[in-house]
Image (cartoon, one colour):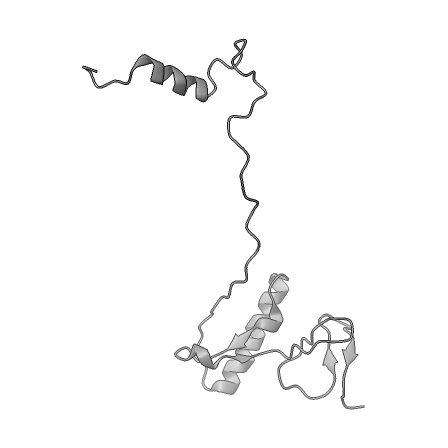
Length: 136
């Protein structure tokens, strides 16, 4: 190896592995795939959380704004888990409180009303089913 090039047989092996000369007889034919299929399937979906920061005068106003933001985002993106929305001070994320009731109904749906609401529980959407102990 005087000129720092690989021997001819290495070059030929690489060229054949990349598919050159596949139409030659005995070269494997054009139907063989160049890459092997993946060994693992796609990864399952995972749960992620988005944290939105905003200013408010007090905790009650912050709760109102957080509920409004969560409901607006759920209208734009229906795949968002509205019942998982929570509110916490920016410097104390360990004190997060739920924004929505989330009580499970008779058909498996969850209450989409705000946490601590009076009266019946209500399924999401217009005309959603109501259940539970409420005002008659």
